[in-house]
Image 1 (cartoon, rainbow, N blue to C red):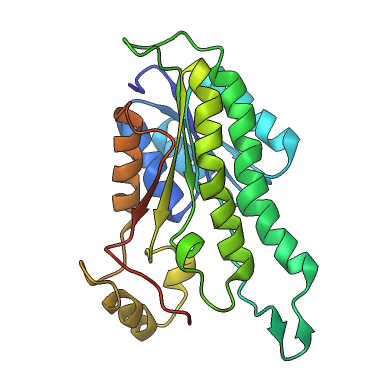
Image 2: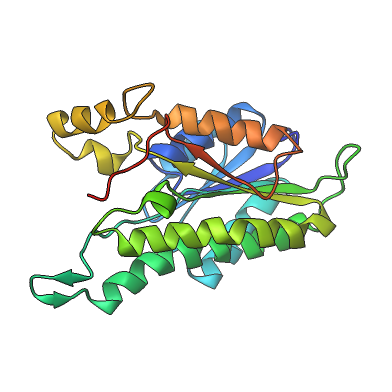
Amino acid sequence: MKLDGYSAIVTGGASGLGAATARALAAAGAKVVVADLQDGFALAAELGGASIVGDVAEPDFAAAAVAHATQLAPLGALVNCAGVGNAGRILGRDGPISLDAFARVIRVNLVGSFNMLRVAAAAMERNTPQGEDGERGVIINTASIAAYDGQIGQAAYASSKAGIVGLTLPAARELARVGVRVVTIAPGLFETPMMQGLPAEVQASLGAAVPYPSRLGLPREYAALALHIVANTMLNGETIRLDGALRMAPR
């Protein structure tokens, strides 16, 4: 899909994978809406787009983000990068993990992604079909290799990301009738704000565990894949691992 003349929404767009993707989409011609709990106004101004602050799992926020985008141009792409992690064993030293702690991760990562997807798809359905395939839009969700290789202490996070993987094919099948594709990226270990908060020696050790290239992934590498997914119409209904062949150990 060609993005020139279209808008795009990037959730979690104020930093990390989302910020790199927002820049890549803007460079490809899209008017980008940076949607995040953090203030993304400076980045939006840099890109000539817009910013909205709020919770991706709230219906009103999804509607407002799409309204911001469609005021700029027809909505052509949504990239869901917003997410949280909450390490905790099912049975910890003080007893079972809090149900609220588990539910919060599911709410942001899975419910939030679905919330944005459903409202964005409704806007994309109204687009004029593009090209010989009649494409109207692209939705990219972010899972994690934890969906497949969840480690001890990652029950909530791995479950939320596995839910996104499971959402991909049925959503792609249903939205095919309106010319909207759905693809998921499952990153491995990447340089994100969460990762950068760890000591340098820990980051180096984690990067060394990646078979090749033996380093942490770069946000621009995620953004490059997102941009390719937008451009390649045959990519649909699939989850793509972006992990340097890493398979995580139990702990």
